[in-house]
Figure 1 (cartoon, rainbow, N blue to C red):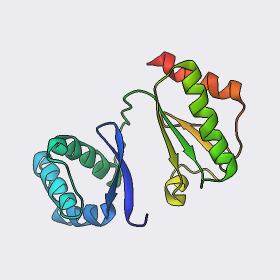
Figure 2 (cartoon, rainbow, N blue to C red):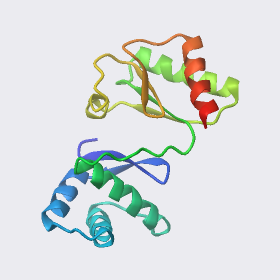
Figure 3 (cartoon, rainbow, N blue to C red):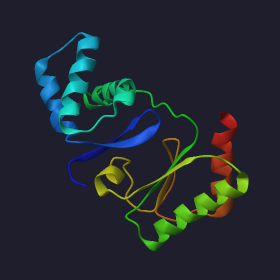
Amino acid sequence: MEGVTMIRIGGVEIGILDLDISFEEIKQLNIHNEDELKRAIFQEIKKRNYVPSSKEEEYTDGLYKAYRKFMGEKVEEEYEGLEIKILGPGCARCDKLEQDVRTILTELNIAAEVLHVRDPMAIADYGIIGTPALVVNGIIKSAGKVPNRDDIVKWITEIQNKS
């Protein structure tokens, strides 16, 4: 969807409308106080997006982190558990990879957030050329092919054992 950027808020990927436009407007305000900046970002985003009142603090923190990335700061990603992304437009190979991952997770009895990223711009952010690609907790494990089952199991269990 054009104009929507996916960011992590409270451990969940959320689509935010006109995020870059809002961030450009905030940047022009030249706010240096962190608390003021967080409030300004939240209020600006809330103008164009629905924010559940029970999640305002999580949104404020997630939006602030996204703003810092927007400003070019290095921001450490926080994963609450296992996150697996399949990057690809939804072709047969991409769908097969997603199904393989879900089957393996079920067989291993491992809980994970599985996202199928279809947006070409979001895929391009990873710097890969060939799809499908498999990303486990932010690390590209495979690109341009459907990896074999043994490799997928190895990658998932390696990450799972580290947590």
